[in-house]
Length: 127
Image 1 (cartoon, rainbow, N blue to C red):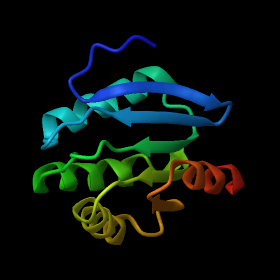
Image 2 (image 1 turned 90 degrees about the vertical axis):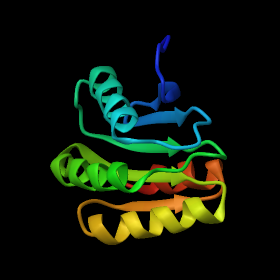
Image 3 (image 1 turned 60 degrees about the horizontal axis):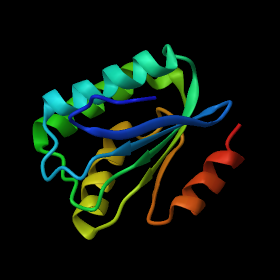
């Protein structure tokens, strides 16, 4: 899919049940950018129940308002997510993801990884 996006580098189906989303190398992700990413994802997947592989870029950082927006969206979308794996690259990203995970714990299986192949392997093991 050709993207005209301010936040996503690519979006594709890596198999019948897994959508792979790769983010552009943006220093600060705000609510507007995150909202754009959700809209592109919804349009691409027709809101189908899927596994999500999210691949951050090395410099991605999400601000507080965008984190809160993401938490709200995770709760709303819990029935359309089989499982979610997030690939991170830095300690600040790990810290932000850990904080995020505490707020959506129990909604659906979610883990973060530093290795893309291990993230995909874990997703493949999920229903």
